[in-house]
Image (cartoon, rainbow, N blue to C red):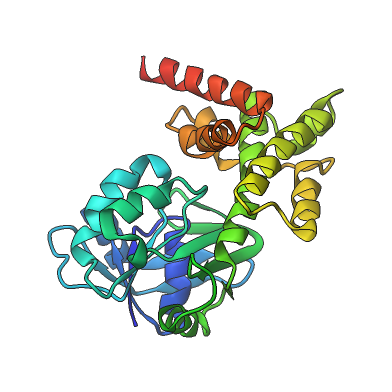
Length: 306
Protein backbone atom coordinates (compact mmCIF):
# COMPACT_ATOMS: atom_id res chain seq x y z
CA UNK A 1 0.00 0.00 0.00
CA UNK A 2 1.36 3.40 -1.06
CA UNK A 3 0.48 6.14 1.42
CA UNK A 4 0.82 9.88 0.83
CA UNK A 5 0.89 12.17 3.88
CA UNK A 6 0.00 15.82 3.35
CA UNK A 7 2.62 17.76 5.29
CA UNK A 8 5.11 16.57 7.86
CA UNK A 9 3.84 18.53 10.83
CA UNK A 10 3.08 17.61 14.39
CA UNK A 11 0.24 15.19 13.60
CA UNK A 12 0.69 13.89 10.05
CA UNK A 13 4.44 13.87 10.52
CA UNK A 14 4.12 11.82 13.68
CA UNK A 15 1.83 9.10 12.32
CA UNK A 16 3.51 9.14 8.92
CA UNK A 17 6.88 8.89 10.63
CA UNK A 18 5.78 5.92 12.67
CA UNK A 19 4.58 4.24 9.47
CA UNK A 20 7.88 4.97 7.72
CA UNK A 21 9.79 3.70 10.74
CA UNK A 22 7.98 0.36 10.42
CA UNK A 23 8.92 0.02 6.75
CA UNK A 24 5.63 1.11 5.18
CA UNK A 25 5.70 2.81 1.77
CA UNK A 26 5.16 6.43 2.85
CA UNK A 27 5.77 9.69 1.01
CA UNK A 28 5.29 13.20 2.42
CA UNK A 29 3.83 16.00 0.28
CA UNK A 30 5.53 19.11 1.65
CA UNK A 31 6.60 22.62 0.71
CA UNK A 32 10.12 23.04 -0.74
CA UNK A 33 11.53 24.52 2.49
CA UNK A 34 10.27 21.58 4.55
CA UNK A 35 11.54 19.13 1.92
CA UNK A 36 15.02 20.67 2.16
CA UNK A 37 15.00 20.44 5.95
CA UNK A 38 13.88 16.81 5.87
CA UNK A 39 16.58 15.99 3.33
CA UNK A 40 19.22 17.61 5.54
CA UNK A 41 18.18 16.46 9.00
CA UNK A 42 15.59 13.73 8.49
CA UNK A 43 12.17 13.47 10.07
CA UNK A 44 12.82 13.73 13.80
CA UNK A 45 10.42 12.53 16.49
CA UNK A 46 10.91 12.99 20.22
CA UNK A 47 8.40 10.90 22.15
CA UNK A 48 7.88 9.01 25.42
CA UNK A 49 7.39 5.98 23.15
CA UNK A 50 10.85 6.32 21.64
CA UNK A 51 12.72 8.90 19.58
CA UNK A 52 13.34 8.46 15.87
CA UNK A 53 15.35 10.11 13.13
CA UNK A 54 14.26 8.91 9.71
CA UNK A 55 15.26 9.41 6.11
CA UNK A 56 11.89 9.84 4.39
CA UNK A 57 10.61 10.23 0.85
CA UNK A 58 9.16 13.62 -0.06
CA UNK A 59 7.45 15.27 -3.01
CA UNK A 60 6.44 18.87 -3.59
CA UNK A 61 3.52 20.27 -5.56
CA UNK A 62 5.60 20.54 -8.72
CA UNK A 63 6.96 16.98 -8.48
CA UNK A 64 3.74 15.24 -7.40
CA UNK A 65 2.58 12.69 -9.96
CA UNK A 66 0.59 9.47 -10.02
CA UNK A 67 -2.08 8.20 -7.66
CA UNK A 68 -1.72 6.84 -4.12
CA UNK A 69 -3.73 4.11 -2.42
CA UNK A 70 -4.34 6.30 0.64
CA UNK A 71 -3.89 10.03 1.15
CA UNK A 72 -3.75 11.00 4.83
CA UNK A 73 -4.93 14.53 5.54
CA UNK A 74 -4.13 16.21 8.87
CA UNK A 75 -4.28 19.94 8.15
CA UNK A 76 -5.94 22.67 10.19
CA UNK A 77 -9.52 23.32 9.11
CA UNK A 78 -8.71 26.84 7.90
CA UNK A 79 -6.23 25.30 5.43
CA UNK A 80 -8.71 22.70 4.15
CA UNK A 81 -9.49 24.30 0.79
CA UNK A 82 -5.82 24.67 -0.11
CA UNK A 83 -5.11 21.15 1.14
CA UNK A 84 -7.83 19.70 -1.09
CA UNK A 85 -6.24 21.42 -4.08
CA UNK A 86 -2.81 20.10 -3.07
CA UNK A 87 -3.81 16.45 -2.83
CA UNK A 88 -6.24 16.39 -5.76
CA UNK A 89 -3.64 15.21 -8.32
CA UNK A 90 -2.79 12.24 -6.07
CA UNK A 91 -6.39 11.01 -5.75
CA UNK A 92 -7.37 8.52 -8.43
CA UNK A 93 -10.41 6.29 -9.02
CA UNK A 94 -9.23 3.72 -6.47
CA UNK A 95 -7.65 6.09 -3.95
CA UNK A 96 -8.96 6.63 -0.43
CA UNK A 97 -8.69 9.90 1.48
CA UNK A 98 -8.24 9.54 5.25
CA UNK A 99 -8.84 12.82 7.13
CA UNK A 100 -7.82 13.04 10.77
CA UNK A 101 -8.92 16.63 11.30
CA UNK A 102 -10.82 17.77 14.37
CA UNK A 103 -14.60 18.00 14.17
CA UNK A 104 -16.89 16.81 11.38
CA UNK A 105 -17.48 19.76 9.06
CA UNK A 106 -14.65 18.81 6.69
CA UNK A 107 -16.48 15.72 5.41
CA UNK A 108 -18.84 17.83 3.32
CA UNK A 109 -15.98 19.57 1.52
CA UNK A 110 -14.06 16.33 0.99
CA UNK A 111 -17.13 14.51 -0.30
CA UNK A 112 -17.80 17.33 -2.74
CA UNK A 113 -14.22 17.27 -3.98
CA UNK A 114 -13.59 13.53 -4.22
CA UNK A 115 -16.92 11.73 -3.79
CA UNK A 116 -18.16 10.26 -0.52
CA UNK A 117 -17.07 6.77 -1.54
CA UNK A 118 -13.41 7.80 -1.52
CA UNK A 119 -13.44 9.41 1.94
CA UNK A 120 -12.78 7.13 4.92
CA UNK A 121 -13.76 8.10 8.46
CA UNK A 122 -10.80 9.00 10.66
CA UNK A 123 -9.65 10.75 13.81
CA UNK A 124 -6.66 10.80 16.10
CA UNK A 125 -5.75 11.42 19.72
CA UNK A 126 -2.32 12.96 20.21
CA UNK A 127 -0.73 15.97 21.90
CA UNK A 128 2.20 17.03 19.74
CA UNK A 129 3.80 20.16 18.36
CA UNK A 130 6.74 21.23 16.21
CA UNK A 131 9.96 22.30 17.91
CA UNK A 132 12.08 25.28 16.94
CA UNK A 133 14.15 23.21 14.50
CA UNK A 134 11.22 21.43 12.88
CA UNK A 135 11.34 18.34 15.07
CA UNK A 136 8.09 16.68 16.19
CA UNK A 137 7.61 16.85 19.95
CA UNK A 138 5.15 14.25 21.28
CA UNK A 139 4.08 15.59 24.67
CA UNK A 140 2.31 12.68 26.41
CA UNK A 141 1.67 8.96 26.16
CA UNK A 142 -1.41 9.06 23.92
CA UNK A 143 -0.78 8.42 20.21
CA UNK A 144 -3.84 6.76 18.68
CA UNK A 145 -5.20 6.88 15.14
CA UNK A 146 -8.69 5.54 14.41
CA UNK A 147 -10.21 4.82 11.01
CA UNK A 148 -12.99 2.84 9.37
CA UNK A 149 -15.78 2.96 6.85
CA UNK A 150 -18.18 5.81 7.56
CA UNK A 151 -21.15 3.58 6.71
CA UNK A 152 -20.03 1.11 9.38
CA UNK A 153 -18.19 -2.17 9.38
CA UNK A 154 -14.89 -2.85 7.66
CA UNK A 155 -13.76 -3.25 4.06
CA UNK A 156 -10.77 -4.57 2.13
CA UNK A 157 -9.28 -1.08 1.94
CA UNK A 158 -9.57 -0.38 5.67
CA UNK A 159 -8.25 -3.87 6.41
CA UNK A 160 -5.26 -3.14 4.15
CA UNK A 161 -4.71 0.14 5.97
CA UNK A 162 -4.86 -1.65 9.32
CA UNK A 163 -2.25 -4.09 8.04
CA UNK A 164 0.00 -1.18 7.03
CA UNK A 165 -0.29 0.28 10.52
CA UNK A 166 0.14 -3.06 12.28
CA UNK A 167 3.90 -2.69 12.73
CA UNK A 168 3.90 1.02 13.53
CA UNK A 169 4.86 2.35 16.95
CA UNK A 170 1.46 3.90 17.65
CA UNK A 171 -1.95 2.68 18.75
CA UNK A 172 -4.26 1.87 15.85
CA UNK A 173 -8.00 1.36 16.06
CA UNK A 174 -9.70 -0.14 13.00
CA UNK A 175 -13.22 0.73 14.03
CA UNK A 176 -16.50 -0.62 12.66
CA UNK A 177 -18.15 2.42 14.34
CA UNK A 178 -15.78 5.17 13.35
CA UNK A 179 -18.40 7.92 13.11
CA UNK A 180 -19.65 7.13 16.60
CA UNK A 181 -16.08 7.54 17.80
CA UNK A 182 -15.69 10.74 15.80
CA UNK A 183 -18.79 12.18 17.43
CA UNK A 184 -17.55 11.18 20.87
CA UNK A 185 -14.28 13.01 20.29
CA UNK A 186 -16.19 16.02 18.95
CA UNK A 187 -18.39 16.12 22.04
CA UNK A 188 -15.23 16.31 24.15
CA UNK A 189 -13.36 18.77 21.94
CA UNK A 190 -16.12 21.35 21.37
CA UNK A 191 -16.68 22.13 25.08
CA UNK A 192 -12.93 22.03 25.75
CA UNK A 193 -12.29 24.57 22.97
CA UNK A 194 -15.31 26.67 23.90
CA UNK A 195 -14.47 26.98 27.57
CA UNK A 196 -10.67 27.25 27.51
CA UNK A 197 -10.88 29.93 24.79
CA UNK A 198 -13.75 31.76 26.48
CA UNK A 199 -12.01 31.76 29.87
CA UNK A 200 -8.44 31.99 28.50
CA UNK A 201 -7.53 29.36 31.05
CA UNK A 202 -6.72 25.69 31.54
CA UNK A 203 -9.29 23.15 32.69
CA UNK A 204 -7.78 23.18 36.20
CA UNK A 205 -8.01 26.95 36.47
CA UNK A 206 -11.61 26.92 35.27
CA UNK A 207 -12.40 24.28 37.91
CA UNK A 208 -11.02 26.61 40.59
CA UNK A 209 -13.61 29.28 39.80
CA UNK A 210 -16.98 29.45 41.50
CA UNK A 211 -19.12 28.36 38.55
CA UNK A 212 -16.50 26.91 36.22
CA UNK A 213 -17.44 23.27 36.63
CA UNK A 214 -21.15 23.98 36.21
CA UNK A 215 -20.51 25.99 33.04
CA UNK A 216 -18.25 23.28 31.63
CA UNK A 217 -20.89 20.63 32.29
CA UNK A 218 -23.58 22.78 30.69
CA UNK A 219 -21.45 23.17 27.55
CA UNK A 220 -20.81 19.44 27.43
CA UNK A 221 -24.51 18.64 27.76
CA UNK A 222 -25.37 20.98 24.89
CA UNK A 223 -22.91 19.11 22.67
CA UNK A 224 -23.98 15.67 23.90
CA UNK A 225 -27.61 16.52 23.11
CA UNK A 226 -26.67 17.57 19.57
CA UNK A 227 -24.82 14.27 19.11
CA UNK A 228 -27.83 12.33 20.41
CA UNK A 229 -30.14 14.11 17.96
CA UNK A 230 -27.76 13.02 15.20
CA UNK A 231 -27.98 9.41 16.37
CA UNK A 232 -24.52 9.38 17.96
CA UNK A 233 -25.00 10.30 21.59
CA UNK A 234 -21.90 9.51 23.66
CA UNK A 235 -21.92 6.03 25.17
CA UNK A 236 -21.62 5.83 29.00
CA UNK A 237 -17.90 5.10 28.96
CA UNK A 238 -17.20 7.95 26.52
CA UNK A 239 -19.37 10.31 28.55
CA UNK A 240 -17.54 9.48 31.77
CA UNK A 241 -14.15 9.81 30.08
CA UNK A 242 -15.00 13.19 28.55
CA UNK A 243 -16.39 14.64 31.76
CA UNK A 244 -13.37 13.30 33.62
CA UNK A 245 -11.05 15.27 31.33
CA UNK A 246 -13.24 18.36 31.26
CA UNK A 247 -13.66 18.67 35.04
CA UNK A 248 -10.30 17.41 36.30
CA UNK A 249 -9.04 19.63 39.10
CA UNK A 250 -5.46 20.76 38.66
CA UNK A 251 -5.44 19.85 34.96
CA UNK A 252 -3.16 21.95 32.74
CA UNK A 253 -5.10 20.86 29.64
CA UNK A 254 -6.21 23.48 27.11
CA UNK A 255 -7.50 23.16 23.58
CA UNK A 256 -5.00 23.74 20.78
CA UNK A 257 -7.47 26.40 19.66
CA UNK A 258 -6.68 28.43 22.77
CA UNK A 259 -2.97 28.17 22.03
CA UNK A 260 -3.63 29.37 18.46
CA UNK A 261 -5.70 32.23 19.81
CA UNK A 262 -3.08 33.32 22.35
CA UNK A 263 -0.44 33.23 19.60
CA UNK A 264 -2.55 35.68 17.58
CA UNK A 265 -3.18 33.27 14.71
CA UNK A 266 -6.31 31.97 12.97
CA UNK A 267 -8.41 29.41 14.81
CA UNK A 268 -10.73 26.53 13.96
CA UNK A 269 -13.55 28.31 15.79
CA UNK A 270 -16.09 28.15 12.97
CA UNK A 271 -15.14 24.55 12.15
CA UNK A 272 -15.46 23.27 15.73
CA UNK A 273 -17.68 25.56 17.81
CA UNK A 274 -19.54 27.13 14.90
CA UNK A 275 -20.39 23.82 13.29
CA UNK A 276 -21.62 22.39 16.59
CA UNK A 277 -23.83 25.45 17.11
CA UNK A 278 -25.24 25.23 13.59
CA UNK A 279 -26.07 21.57 14.21
CA UNK A 280 -27.71 22.52 17.51
CA UNK A 281 -29.91 25.10 15.83
CA UNK A 282 -30.87 22.72 13.05
CA UNK A 283 -31.87 20.14 15.65
CA UNK A 284 -33.77 22.63 17.82
CA UNK A 285 -31.31 22.32 20.72
CA UNK A 286 -30.86 25.37 22.95
CA UNK A 287 -27.14 26.12 23.18
CA UNK A 288 -26.45 29.35 25.09
CA UNK A 289 -22.91 28.36 26.03
CA UNK A 290 -21.98 27.54 22.45
CA UNK A 291 -23.54 30.83 21.31
CA UNK A 292 -21.42 32.77 23.77
CA UNK A 293 -18.23 30.91 22.91
CA UNK A 294 -18.71 31.37 19.17
CA UNK A 295 -19.46 35.09 19.49
CA UNK A 296 -16.24 35.41 21.50
CA UNK A 297 -14.21 33.61 18.82
CA UNK A 298 -15.83 35.62 16.04
CA UNK A 299 -15.03 38.88 17.84
CA UNK A 300 -11.42 37.73 18.16
CA UNK A 301 -11.22 36.99 14.41
CA UNK A 302 -12.72 40.39 13.54
CA UNK A 303 -10.11 42.14 15.67
CA UNK A 304 -7.30 39.93 14.36
CA UNK A 305 -8.13 40.62 10.73
CA UNK A 306 -8.50 44.37 11.42
